[in-house]
Image (cartoon, rainbow, N blue to C red; front, side, top):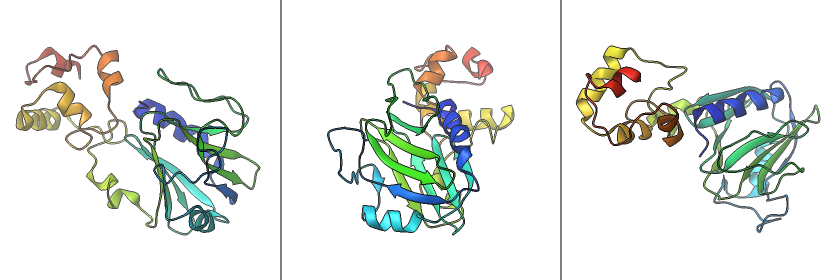
Length: 220
């Protein structure tokens, strides 16, 4: 599953669309997957492809932001396109190297296989969201700040953008009295964006019940 580092890489990749206008949107599946030509409303959360395309065409992207595993594009009409990758989601830019993941690969052709959503900007840059297992989502939020509405307003701190003091971290751990995995994988308890890969790469035992004296606590 893509975690914070992968989503941050995707954010930096698609920053090429900032200050550019959308000239075309395709929200039916492309690339030759089993649902090719169909509107996949499990991934693209909208009433219909036509309505979503109508709300996005002509809009200028003002910024690309991230919190935890969520990424969003902010447009000039105070709406945001919020993206979550789920298990196998990814963003790709035509002509640029695909992002790499441990558990899956993104097709090198264009549009890539399992492309659920594609935007074309006025500088001819094409951005596609792919998702083979259909556990990700793309949703248009009609609010200038998605952090103030669900589900983003329920997230814990972003460990990069909102690091907390060791005192605050230890206070939260004392209150929870749970295992390391339950604490860190719950995106609302302490931090958001952390997953199993993070635990593995930092050699943190997921079954530990933490106290402020544990070696795992000091490592974190």
